[in-house]
Amino acid sequence: MLGNCQADGIARALSLLLPEARVSLVPLATLRRDHATLTHLRDHLAPFDHVFSQFFPEGFVTGGNVHALAQGDARLRLFPTILFPAFHPDMVHVGDVGALSATHLVRSPMGPYHSAIALCAYLEGRTVAETVRLFRDDVYARLGYYDAWDHASTYLLGSARDLAFPLDAELARWSRRGCFMHVLNHPKLFVLADIAHRLAREAGLAPLSVAAEDYLADDLVSDAVWPLYPEIARRYGLPGTTHYKPRERKWGAAPILFDRSAFVAGSFSAYARHPADRLVCPRVAAWRADPAVRALFT
Image (cartoon, rainbow, N blue to C red; front, side, top):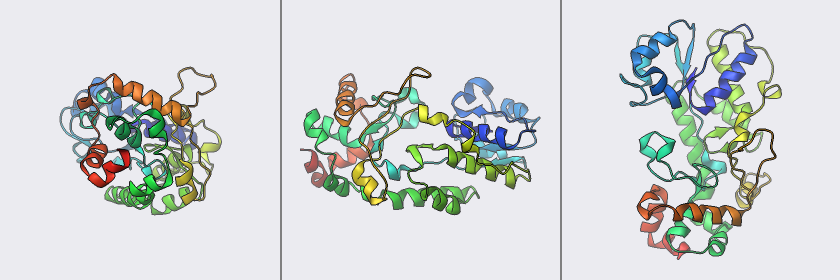
């Protein structure tokens, strides 16, 4: 199993569902350090009967991307990375996203995750109190946040079909369970368990007929959890909140929650530690270049 933090949950689910199998995770985050070249990676994978992988581009190992790894290897099955920002359309990354490393991203109180509204307001010189007042229905509507479901589902379903792993039925099922994402790229465990079931079945294996999420801890809930803003939640018929939970620092300790004022204040403090040219975010740059949108912030 090759992949990001999502693959870890899928691998744990496969270990539960296939108790006779040996399931091994190869994290993409340490791929270059651990394997360096495509040849070395192929040697590492040689003993396995099945190889499941998320997409990885050029640069993770010398010699090519995941398609080069898959060439001539009938064992390898690609599965999608779940990106679904519809529940959290305000979330963005700030910094050099193209560098393929979290070390090039600016940190907020929520780690690599930022509020586009907060960042834009900061760059426009707003105060914390003025910024908090921007989190409201008419602003979300003007910024397109209520169109996020259509965009997110089109992207997810299209990218999944491109990998011959359609998710139309799964998305409908996940949606019936409410907000199925912790943040835009961290699905809840039942999503990952569904993918594990499919990978096993479609590989000709016989997974246990159980809901893996009933037996396993959702490790991603210990990372950042972004609020489903109440105005957005109402559009989906779901409960909302304005509390942010950062990544937990100590195992077993009660998680810390920030209210919106504390989150915005912490974000402004983080931004003040960087020159403005480090606070790079294409969405916010586009807003500031559009006089009608910029007027919301000025």
